[in-house]
Each structure stands twice: as C-alpha cells, then as structure tokens.
Image (cartoon, rainbow over all chains, first blue to last red; front, side):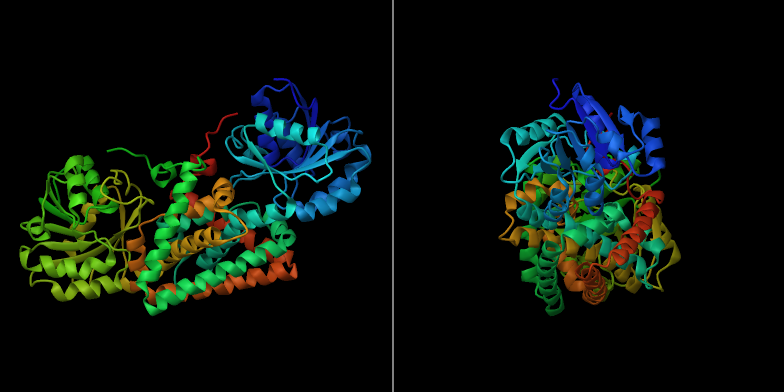
Length: 306
Length: 306
C-alpha cells in the first residue's frame, strides 16, 4: 500500500512499539522505520530480532527526518523524551504518543512542541501482560480500538492521516476528548488493573492460605486476575500517578458498591445478590456481540471435545 | 477401564454434571449413568443431547440402585434435595456433592444421611462462565484440582474410590478439611467473583461513561472481569449466603489493601505502587509454572503471527 508516512520513528521499543512495527510490515506499507530505546540491552535485542529497519543509539538520531514520531514510553517519561527530541524534529512532521493517560501527557508534551510540528495523541486499546521488545506481534491491534485525542486546533488532514495509519495496522479508530478519554480508561482499564493487583496482593499476603494453594487452585477464578496483574509495573505506576482524579473517583464508586454487596452478604439478602449477578451477565453478552472477546469456554484454554 | 461404580446418578444437570458425564464416557468406564434435573426443559435438552444413559423425571427414581450419587445443584438446594432422595438410596452407596462451599453443605446434608450410606463431599475446581446441560465438555477437569473433603470417620476405601473416580475424569485430587476449604475458596474463587461482579456493575451504572463505550473498549482489561461475572447467578448467590464468614473476612483484607493503594495514588507515592505491582508478577509466574494457565498472549484470543 502507499504509506501515509515515508519515515516513522518509534521511541521506546516495548510491546506496543514492537507490535506497531510488525503490523506495519504486515500491511506492506512502503516506509522506513527507525527505532530507539533507552536501554542498550533493548536496542541489541531489537537489532537481533530485526525490529525496526534501523535502530539508533540516540533518540535525536532516530527522529531526524521522520514524518511520524511515535512516543511509546511510560507516561512519566513522555515529557523528558519530548524535550530531548524537540530540536531535532523536522518541520511539518507529526508527533504522536501511545500513552494510557491523555490530559497529563498532553500537558507535558505541548510546551516542547516546535513551531510547525503537529501533535496527535493516540491510545491503542490493546495489550497483553507481556512487555519488552520481544513481546510484540503483528495482529495485536486487529479489531481493537485506537482512540485519537487531537486538540481542537489540529488540522483535519493531519488527524485523518494518523487515523489511516492506525487502520492500516488493523485497528478501528474513534476520536475522543482528553478528559472523557481519561474517565473511560479509568473504568475499562485503570481500575480493573488496580483491583487485580490488589486481589493478587491480598492472596499472596494471607497467612491462612499458602501461596502454593493460591497457585494450585487458581483456575477457580483467581487466575483471570493474575494475567492483568502481571502487566508492566512502571507503566502502571505512571498511569495511576497521572490519572489520579478519575481513578480516585471510580475507586470511590467501586468501594461504595462493594460495601453494598458486603452488607447484602452479611444480612443474607439473597434477592439483592441474585438481581445484581443477573444484571451483569448482560454486559458480557454485549462484549461478545461486539467481537471484543471469544465465547470459547474458558477462553479456549481447555480443549473442547466430547 | 473397570469402573469404580457400576451405576452413577447425577442430580442436577448443569455445567459440572454434564462435563462429568462426558468425561466418564471419554474414560471408557463401564458404568450406567442416570440423571435428573428439576426443570422439564433441562431434562428434555439432556435427552436430546444424549446426556446420561437414562434421564428420569424424579430424583427418587434416578438414585434408585445407584452406587454413587452426585448432587450437582446450587448450594442452597442441597438440603432439600438430600431430604427427598434419602429414603431411596441403597445401603452401602456413596453420596457425594460438588458444591463450592463445604461447611454449610455438610451441615445440611448430614442429618438426612441414612444409616449405612457414605458421604464424601468434593469440589472440582473447574468451570467456565457458561451454565446449563449443553455447556459441559469432557476435558473440563483435565489437570484441574478436585478437593475431597471427607469427615474424620469416613472409611478410607470409600474415600479412595471417590478419588479414583475423579482421577478417571482427568482431575488431580487433594484432601482438605471443610473450614480450610471454605477459606481457600473465598480467596481463589469467591472474592474474585464478587469483585468482578462489582466492577461490571459499577461500569454499567456510570452516567459519565456509556455502556456502549464500556463494551467497545473492554479489551483494555475490563473484559477479563466480565467472563467470571457472567457465571450462574443462583450458584453465586448461594455461595455468598453460605460462606459468609470467610468471604467477609477476605473482603475486609481486600478493602484494607485497596485503601492503602488509593492513599498511595492520592499522595503520589510512586515507589509504593511500583513495589506492589512488581511483587504481584511473581504470583503469575507461579501459576504458569504450575500449568494452571496458558502463557499465550491474551490467552490466545489474538492469533499470533509476524
């Protein structure tokens, strides 16, 4: 296909950037991809894997002449990285980033944007519990949503080009403003991760049930929490530090609701419990109908045969 | 194989019982399986599927002459069902049940046990979010644990026979006392389910984020919660009503921990968050090493190719 960008620079070479690279190659877009990662070990792994057409030892070199620059580093590193590369970005280029939080990231990047350089924040809503340059794969974004969070005064053709690019990587795109983005993500992603981390921490910490038992009997439900609780700790630390207001608001709602269910358990209110548990089934059906999960029993973990 | 029991009665024909039937057939054990379900619709579905060698219209007929009787009904129905069938059980037979809670179930079943009938409570720690007679499959118990919770005065050879039976169905077995069982299950199963139900309820209830958005963007983490929150509402209502003490104790620990993390978010304590999130990764590794989950990215939901 004709490429929306002739030269793309990926800054940070973890799960998202490496999947972007493989998805670009799969799309057949005619495009030179440069890459940079802070750690030498990551750069060497990338070179060994053939991840990026050229891996540079500095972010400044990697962004030189790029038409699209994608910052794929933890949210807390966005500002410093942008400051470093700013003087080396060519006029007319587009800067993008793939952070999980938008308001804070926009606020730290915008002051460093050179005159004549565009900025289109994005958030591909896809991931696995794995991280690092060897964790990426071409189909990660297939049928997943990539949220596009442009400023009001961004040129329409600049935004459309970013959308075209993500669609070529397999994603669906949708525009959203930064504040709404951060609230939606608190609900569908940030708080679920925090809760999963908490549950795994509690299980590990209990003296009355051994770790060995927790692990052995995890298939009974606990297991589903551990996958997302194995996600990258630096990324998630930064998410909670930078999306504080929305996460604390949703946490408040969550504990309120949990206390109501706890009270129903204590008072033996079976009707309330049954009504609550029935209602939540409908949401699951919606997710299956929207093609965002598989209906295979147990996610296809268990082979189905009779 | 030679069958540990010549005639097995399955009372209740949902996910667990139907999987037991298919697993028995897969094992090749020479055994006649009778079945009964309270609803006529379920019995007719079972007959259509070939689920059970004979489906009876009453529990009394189904248990007649059976060597092993398995109660696979919601925990709240165990007592009444046992009372109904008690006069029809043949002397020397073994009664078993597959409920998710043990202390309460043992207390409601034991008073109805006829003289000379054995009782071996069990808990196969396996399941999917699906329920009903058509949801079962032969491999559900493969490499999963079945907890065996016999009384102190139960004959050893009676217990061993139940263990042999479950091993023939693909499960590993382990003995545990009722109180410890209920605490372990509160941690690895009951509280994770309650939390998942709560999170799904909160997401659905928020005015600021639409249901449509919750469903569309669920792949970002929320999705993992919805699977277990789609489990059978009657079963889970009964679990919480009958394992009250252990679930309230673990809930207390969970909210304590969650409040500590909430405080770290509010005060911006990145070190505490990072340390917590790093620690929980180790548990996930343990689960993979124990063979209780797959390491495929995204549980193999996304096809991996480069």
